[in-house]
Image (cartoon, rainbow, N blue to C red; front, side):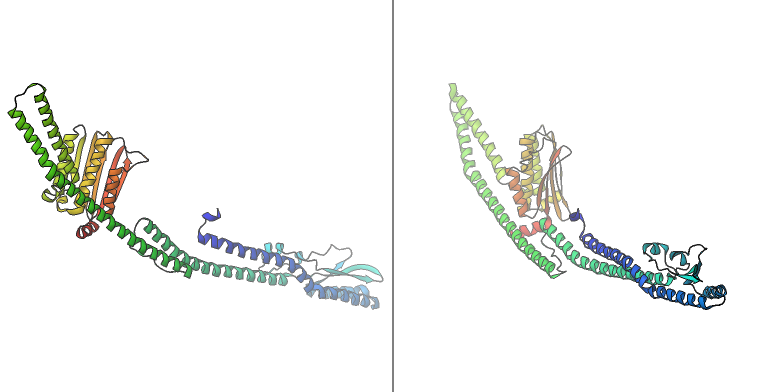
Amino acid sequence: MWQRLSFRTQLFLPLGASFLAALILGGILLRIFATGQLADENEPARRSIRTIATALNDTLRASDNPQKTLDAFVQSLAASSDVHFRSAEGAPAPSPKDGMPNLRGVPQWFVNLLVVPDTDAAAPVLIDGRHIGDLVFLPDLSADLFEKWIGFLALTSLVAVLMVLTGIIAYVFAGSALRPLRHLGEGLTRMRRGDFTKPIPVGGPTEIRQSCAEANALAATLAQLSQDNRDLMHRLVSLQDDERRDLARELHDELGPLLFSIRAGTIALIDASPRVGNLGNSADEVLQSVEALQQTNRRILDRLRPLYIEELGLATTVQTLLRNFRKQAPHIILTDTIDPDLNVIDGPLARTIYRVIQEALTNVLRHAKAGSAHVQATIAGETLLIEISDDGGGFPADNAFGRGLTGMHERVRALSGSLSLLRVDERTYVRCRLPAETTREAQVNH
């Protein structure tokens, strides 16, 4: 649970708990020490009431009319709020809390919170040895309680101010620490996605600044490695194209004439020799085999190197590929959306687009068992979009990319593109995206 909280929450909760604990502790200490302090402050007055009672008793003994003297003394106490005369037959004197009519703005809950000590004191008053009443000291604690209330407010205000100041400092500190950490996290996310161009802002405490600098150095290293990898893959693809071209030339220049010679010789043999027994059938079979070899040779040449991209353009060559697919698989309904502007593309980019479409259609024909397929190749701004979809059975979950698509994936990565295989709404999609600017640079390097 604690680990799920944000950094600011983890920082503020202990601070808030500490200040709250300090406030509670202050209230407890105030409750404990206020009682003794109030008792100590009123102890001199309690001693004085006994002295006054002793003097009064002495005066009453010496007086000719003790009752009159006592009445005069009681009348003189009317101006005092602390000393009272309680007759022996009268009601008991009120408690100290009842003797606080004016609390001067002190809330009652605060008074109830404190333990008000028993500060009253009683001294007996005697006339002729007879107990007729008591002098009672009942102090007015409102001023003392007000002083304690002001102290409590000061303590609370101090804690609140410290809490606010500490919270502001912690918030600013957390922001200064979290901002570079957030930038660091965003930068690492970009690095994970393969974007090494935007550096991570270096800021915050020394440790975070060092981490950001190290992440930027790592991004620069990964960017260089990625560029080296693309260059290497581009050279490998170029070597593959060169090998395909050389092999296609050998097949065309060497095997093609040989097959033509065999076919021509077989036709001449058939025309010159009488068709006797199985000899004529054998000659026909040789002629059929030679024609099949020639067709196979042409298909191999088309797969090794599309000879007409440079002459006819990419869009026209792709349309030729689609026509051949329709002839080869008439049971599959093939639709297409081919952008005519593809004819302006040539070089490795054109061959890569052609190979992706060719390999995807080959998979549809061999493995998909599809009834319909669609080919789309368009230019959208600075991005080339190629998508081949079919309604077949899809692809194995553990082997989405076969050898052919794996090779296409490498060709696409060499041009800083992406190739993905998706299954959506009972249709399989092969999607390829190629950035036009990157591909132009690759074409220039090539």
